[in-house]
Image (cartoon, rainbow over all chains, first blue to last red; front, side, top):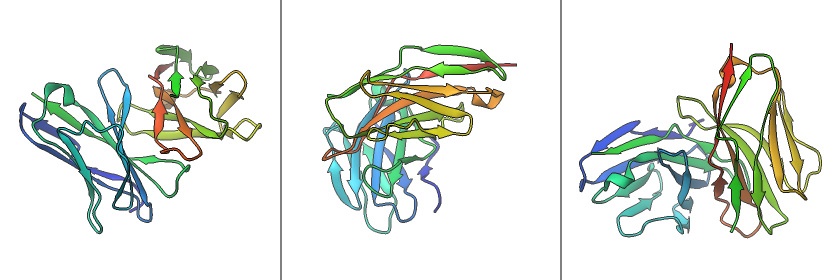
Length: 113
Length: 116
């Protein structure tokens, strides 16, 4: 598609439940980035992919967070056993090449109650 | 490590006036990119303008222009003829350009309100 599509728009989970977020990058873009925006507007980089390969995972809290980009499927970000502090807006962005502009999806707001 | 600082948490401007949002960054890199993104209440991140560090000429996009001072590590955004639709959060972002991970490092944002 011509835009980055993120689903769902809003996700509500009880503490300890699993959350799974999806991202379809712009068609033809090889790079996918995930960012977390917390309530103070701070952005935190989580992970990036080059096609289905992890490119940089230095921002991922590895204990409960995982992500995948499989061929012919939307990319996904999964949080096992959510905590209150995971409440945030999760953005996916895609880029056609390294060093190029990243185009953002509309984000998924995760509310952990 | 690179850092991006936006020292103005909130600003306001009258419609049709000009406003400048400041951004400073810290890096030892010589090759990098700088961006301004707009985030309206819809929360969609919209690219406003992009600057390559190797280019001395300041980038311009219609009413939006930057003042890029590489030696001072400053990257301010000027919005001319402000419109009500410019009301939004504005984020400055840094991206390392060589052998890096190409992730964005964002500032904490400036909330701009355009007054009628």
